Amino acid sequence: MLPRAYDSQHCSIAATLEIVGDRWTLLILREASRGVTRFADFQHTLGLARTVLSDRLGRLTEHGVLERHRYQERPERFEYLLTSKGAELWPVLNALMTWGDKHIMADLPPVVVRHNDCGGSIDSHRICRTCHSPVELHDVYREPGPGALPVPGRG
Image 1 (cartoon, helix red, strand yellow):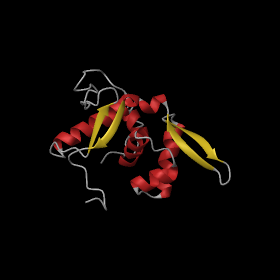
Image 2: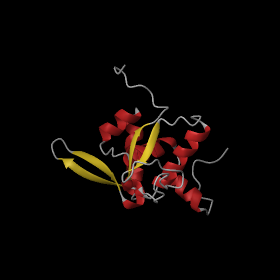
Image 3: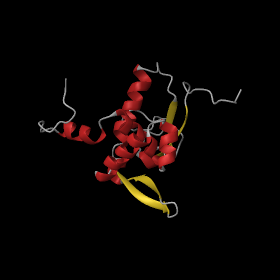
């Protein structure tokens, strides 16, 4: 069994896994890349325990992947914004999503990532399939894909 920490390994992948290598952290990053910033919204969309969310947000903030900003004084409340360092993880998230779309979701993606400029879908290399432009996180929007679950209350 692998140890929980990778201290004995002099490896960039292992060092990165120390920060982002569990499913909740990756899902927090997915939500942050979609524009979620507030603790309650992360908790609502992900359904995880407050203690786990607080721990993961703290770790991501400590490592400069997210920045914590107060948006309300009484009661004191904070939001968590992706830094440029955090936004650089979007290619990893996009690659995981496109791999899952192909190999797990049987090419019926629940979400389609589209290019802001032309509406084309984005491939695993972050290239627009329509205009062939390279795209970054700020260049895209998301919409329900053919594998999206129906929204309750909508026929």
